[in-house]
Structure formats: C-alpha cells, structure tokens
Image (cartoon, rainbow, N blue to C red):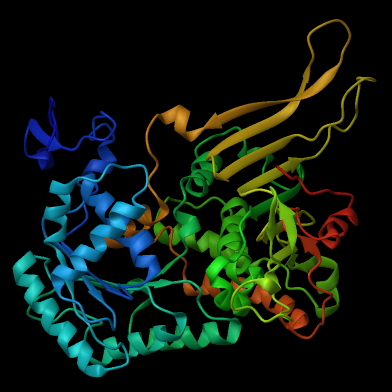
Length: 533
C-alpha cells in the first residue's frame, strides 16, 4: 500500500497530530486541502439495508459506502448489516458485495487491502421482512454489533426494497422497538426511504401516516438522488454565493425555463415496473420538480437544513394546480415506437419484455408549470423527460428576455441562455451575442463555459456518497420533507387523473428523436421552442 506523509502547521486540535499518515491517496491530491470535508466526520453507526441482495444495493449503495471508506470518511466504529430473504452467511454476503464493488465502482481503483478492512464491518441477517421474528433476530444482531464494532447505538435503516414493502418494514420496526435506541445504549435512529413516495397523492398520504406512527419527521430521510448531484447543489452556490445573477432571477428578465432529463436508452429489463410508473411519476413528480424548486426558490435566511427546505417547500406549494380542461394544453404524454438506430432495429415500448402490447404508459412527458408568486408570475417552466430520445442529457436552460431594442441592423438573433448541465458533463454555460472579427457589426452567439472536471481537477462524489454521508451526519438539507412530497403530488395529480381517463394514440414518437410533435406545439402556443442539445 502506498503511503504519503502530510505535515501540517498550526493544525486544529481535533486533528490530534501534526504528522498524519494516509494510505491510498486519491489522484495524488492532499485529502486535507478542504478542511470542512476533513472536519465533518460522521459519528459511529450501523447501517441496516433492507433489500441488500437487490440491484440498488449492489450498483449504488455498497460501492458508495466503500468509496467513503476509501476516502477515510468513516469512523472506526461502523457496520453494515444487510437483510434479504436469500439465505447467506456473513462471508458469503461479503464475497457478493466484493463482486459488486469491483464491477460497479466508478472512477476509483479497487484496493484489496482496504476491502478486507471494510468487509470486517459487513454482516448479514436473512429473513422475510413480513415476519416479526426476523426483527427480533435483527435486534439481537444489532446488539452484538454495537459491542463488537463500537457503533455507539446509532442506527441508520435504509429501505432499498419494493415500495409495497415500505409500510410493513416501518410497522415491524416500530413493533420490535427498533425505531429508537434502548435506554441503556443511547444513540440516534434514522431511516432512509427510497422514492417513489407513493403512486399518487392518496397513496403518498397513506405512506406518510404509517411512517408518522413510528418515526418522528426529524428521523425520516426521503432520498432523491438528483438533489445529491453536484450541479444541482451548485445551483444554490451559483445563485446565493454570487451577486451577479440573483438580481436577474425573476419575471422581469427571464422569458422561460426549460428542464430536460433525456435518456437515449429504452426501459430494458424494467418494462414491467415502468409500465406501472411512466415518465411523469418516475421523473417529473420527484426529481425534476425538486430541481425546479431549487432553481426557483427564494433565498433562505441561512444555509441550514430547515431554512433551505422551507423555501423549497414554499416554491412547490406555489405551483399553479391545473384544472382538468387545462391539462391537454399544458401536459403532453408520449411513448416511443420502433425505429432503426445506428444500423440496429430498436423495439418500441410495447415490444419491450414484460410490457402490455396495448400499454398506455407515458415513456415521455412534457409539462408546462407556472409559479404563482411575485418573482415568477407568468413565467413558464417547461419540464420534459423521456426514454429513447436523441441524446442522454440532463440540463437546465434559463432563457432571458431579448434586448428591448436592436440597434444593429445586421445582428444575429440568438437568445441569451444560462445552461446548467447536470449530466453527462457537469458544468455551466452562458450564451450571448458577440461581434465577429472583421469590418462591420456582424454578431454571432458565443459561449462562456465552466466545466467541473477541468476547473477543479478532481473527482466529484456520486450522489449516493453525498446523501449517505449527509444522513449519517444528520444533515437533511438535500432530503425531501413530507410537505414537499405532498406539494409535488398535488402539482401532477390533475395530469394523472386526466391521462388515466383518456385513450391516446400511442406510440407517437420514433425512438431516437426528441419526442412527439405535440410537445413542440405546447411551446409554440406561447411562441417558444425546445432547446435540443
């Protein structure tokens, strides 16, 4: 193992040394350059993952937790206790998770020595989550782990299961007394709930009531991984850390806002699940409305979890709720049909495995939202998401109003755009008009670009790394609160109601295109066009 010695002068007492030896330096950089990252140590804790044999755990959770260990973000006292119905020993679970980390770890080398140390904190408890006896066994195992791994009685439960299992798990945790720490071993108890938070407004309220009976709201962390993405977080820094842009951030200067989350792939093996969800539920109700709230919220008084979430919730509650007769003007469903892309025949959604050949599922959804407050009155927010579109890209495009009077007769007409790129290349672009070299006053659009990778020269943490660390540290800033979930369901419920009662002529766009023509018509009625990257 490679080691480097870093010497610090006048370092804080909590560093407890002026010479620190660290193994596995990342990209040759000093891991203590960012003092806040170093000082924000998470307390000892045990993480219990329900659904530990599932796809999310193997692809995202365990690789993210390993990466945090790689960066020395974990305390010595930590443990991960997995649960699923599949019988496994601790060693078998460790071997399976090692395979997952080696396969799915992003932008990092796999360190066998570090894994051996990490794996000592992995344990497994098999059993059916509907069986109360399993929770008694889980409680006993947690008690053993507290003494063996010195976790301090702190427990973070993670629901990485099917949504239909959320309520049974929560109720059984309460019945077993696992919703709080025992009196003789005080510590905190928290629970992370994966989206979707319900299938509609009514089921979301049912889930919330069940959770409220067992856990306090301060214990509940509803995870939306989009809020953990660096560029989404950077919206807050961009807006509230600079004095340049915020004065322009309102109806007087902004013509409209477009939020796009496009995928070039189809539903693949998730056809059965996706048939019941659709793009509006799967992406817009949660991820993209949270992004919209981050873009449009008022400045918080302080950068503190409740202050930030209060403003985000306030914005979501300000979204105009559509009347049934307004839905067809402001919301467009789409479904991809077969096409030939790159010399390969691509099936339509109805031809995918596990999909009803007459399915009315929206694999594309575009919605025009309006915010009824003084800052944004009259400004349309266009949100779209879809499968099998022309390109994989997620970005936010803020188009500013044109100059009130054009003094250059030969001026090119091009909008002033601020583009925040969320994926695949995180960064920010500002587009404006500039004079072309040469005689005369010929103008053309140009861009000023900021790119995360080239500007900082370091790897950005994955969303799950950020969010898992926040939950362990007790920071709920990037997590959604129940009132935010309820407000976002209220915004889309009228659309769901009208679409469920309407027979659409589907499919209505070819795979590999930018979606149905009716989505273009939705913008054209206000004189706007989609920006297709």
